[in-house]
Image (cartoon, rainbow, N blue to C red):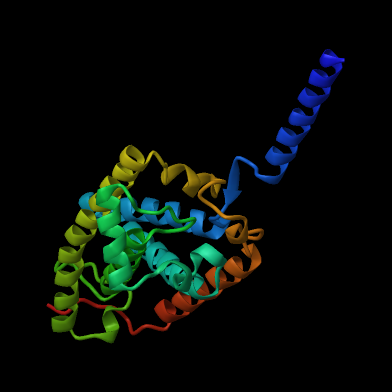
Length: 251
């Protein structure tokens, strides 16, 4: 009878384990597809902008195209922060200064809680990078290289204003580069000290189940809404460039 009881218990335990696994899968989805695609395309566009700038004036048109890409993507991400899925919305992850300070102190003490989406420090880094990228890309549209290439919206401003915006465009790049380095170091520190990867979820969209409560799992990416927003933003920028005054450099 003992053997029968053991087998029954073992079978019951196995069933309970299987049920638990079915209910609590190893990973749960937090990042929608538009957020992930936008993130990596921004990385690619930023690198492309830098490379095409370093290659010289003959690559200016490619530099402009990468700038178009950045401004559309950043504009989309800002809108998606209002109408996107749960963890994409700013209202879900941006915290006040006191909450953020408490999180920072807790992090250094090894007591910081985990967040399904962005943590408070990461949230402010996201906001800072998005705003800086927007100003960077927008200012480039009005700039000039002081040789013969001018931005597509140069005709809207005076040459003096264009030169000021060009200077801002150049200086801001180094601030953006520094911020990007800090961002990468923070991701590495998070992996080393909290043993949690932030990079893999930005590819897969999923985090470990113990970090993501069931109530915070997303079940849709709202892809069609994202496509519509990208189309409207791209069309709007195309219209603006097409109807801009003829851009001719003033010596």
